[in-house]
Image 1 (spheres, rainbow, N blue to C red):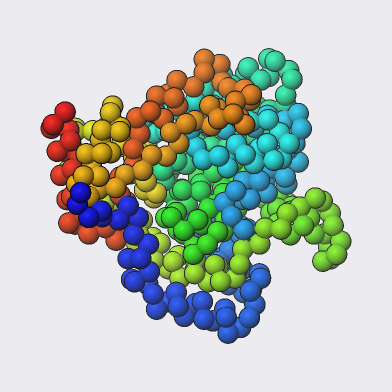
Image 2 (image 1 turned 180 degrees about the vertical axis):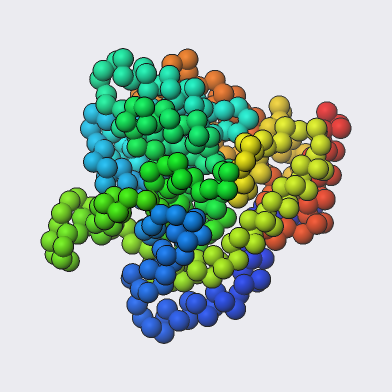
Amino acid sequence: MSDMIPFIDLGAQRARIKDRIDAAVMKVLDEGRYILGPEVNELEDRLAEFSGLGRALSCANGTDAILIPLMAFGIGPGDAVFVPSFTFAATAEVVVLAGATPVFVDIDPDTYNMSAASLAAAVEAVNQAGELTPRAVIAVDLFGQPADYPALKPIARENGLKLISDCAQGYGCTLDGKATLHWADVLTVSFYPAKPLGAYGDGGAILCKDDALYAAMKSVRVHGEGASRYEYARIGLNSRLDTIQAAILLAKLDVFGEEIAMRQAVADAYATGFGNAVKTPRIIDGARSTWAQYTIEVADRDGFRAFLAERGVPTAVYYPIPLHKHEPYSGFPCAPGGLPATEAAADRVVSLPMHPDMPQADIDRVVDAVTGYASRN
């Protein structure tokens, strides 16, 4: 077996921006303001500025970033929240934690993002059953590209639903030049280290356009705090972003736009090199992806992964079991007609190495391995 190339090379990024990260961290250590220090407010301002609209509120992790708005909206028992099944557990988990019921929706077979047709059918089915009150949609910007918000938003609005953009993997992605918050009520972010904009620990953020919602979420973030520190307006969480993580993220945000372009260059090289050898990602018209993952489809996934591993190319499989197939989620409703596109994708998708510092030699190695497998089969 050849030596493996990195799947994600966080060390290469660290080497490139080491001085600015070291200086940022040492400033926090010297000042000693470890919780909600000035870097946290600066980061929130910069996140909103980078997105071009709204206000940003940082929090402890990407999971809380989705839970906090649900709590601020007052979503709970008896409410239905429509979510994809082809996603990380957090998207549905927060619905259950809020006391509401997740309703699983199918995906588009090419983009892997929520299907507008399946969503419409699911909302209609819940309305007809009359047992739950539809309250919100959580659309995931999977693998870094935006969901089809121009198709999803009218369905949400016609049914009085809040629209949340779970942009954990896709902060920085745009559709027609706009951040997904342009269509959504809330945009949520994860700063897990492997994300395109990643901290050196957990972290998250929420962006919104409504001042009243922002104030409610800010209260939820710190134990439901009211007008003063020991006055409580609601049930809340302890979900603050550490100042050190904010400082690291500020240093990374300085180069984030450049890194999105670097990721796009890797994706373009893959697409050119692969040709028609495999089913490559389809980005919807007008979209810019952050390429959190470069995900293709193959028929014999196990054989494909073994072939690449022998040639020193690592792979990863995300969401091999859709959420609605896991025991804790199996009792929750699915859209009419089931989730055939979700189940098909779960059996076939595989992700390839992707990071902004990927050298040409590594790109060539991946292309040679993928096309070599295709020619053999």
